[in-house]
Length: 251
Image (cartoon, rainbow, N blue to C red):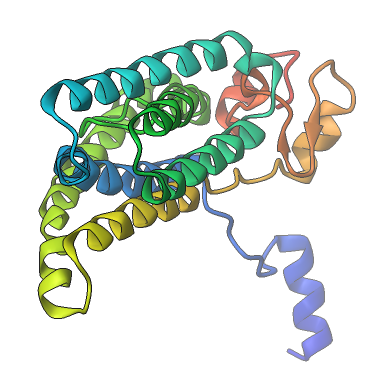
């Protein structure tokens, strides 16, 4: 069969090759792993770093309380307005905030600036994910699969966080190893880990796969909105299987 004949045969039978986009679930699971790794070593290195800066246990407790309180306030605020905003924009904004937090935490050494940075940037002082990423990603996961597969997907999401978080805890020994091998003091090595944490947080905000052309054409005849860069809101992001079973929502 000639090249033109093969092309004419493949086109109607759907055998043309197209790059397969990663699913929303696979992107979110990868993002969960990156964040869990960073949270694993930061949870152990944060009190060590603050002690090296000269803070006493009361100061460290106040800083930890400020970070947890900031996480709670920001998560509550995002939960109240997330349904009106695009999830991709929320995740990117959260990643940029975390990036700025880690860099600022490595640059400042005074008590009150660190309290403000910890509250606004919500540095995670625990091995578990307590940031605003968690409710955003869970809401997206719930819309990405059929109802009977949702429990298995959430189990994988939790398993990835636990296993990779344990590996991150092992990485807490890297600053001591780096200071012994490289011309770095212990404080500079600890600061580098906070920058690494920020980079991993920024990398964890993978953009959501855009809606397909068929979904966009279906959305044009409904009240739902779907943009080429991704679904317009969290409530609008539904998997193809769930869209097929629900009428009136195209995305």
